[in-house]
Image 1: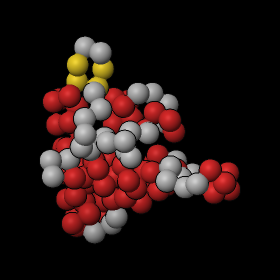
Image 2: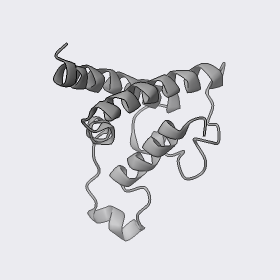
Image 3: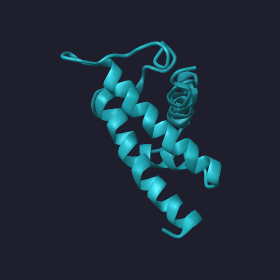
Image 4: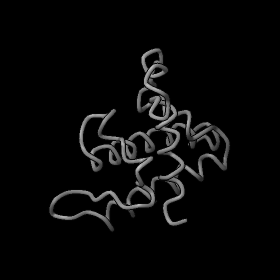
Length: 119
């Protein structure tokens, strides 16, 4: 799948914010913040670092291919009806959401690179 990292991440975001819960369950649910979601999604091993780098690259590719004068388009996949909720939980449009995730990935990649390789 062309955007498998983005799609997997969006389902993780959905779980972390309670998107897939019933209305009564949502009232009791404490959603995670976007930095917490990114941190948990990446993991801590070498392969996790590699996947974070590839995930960041997918975000850049998605933005480059789907940006229009009207803004960033929701393209299915990765943004089908189950995964097009980012604007409901986080400030800004899809472009702002993905660029924020990309910036958070940069920070997490730097931290993990230092821990794994010492630089």
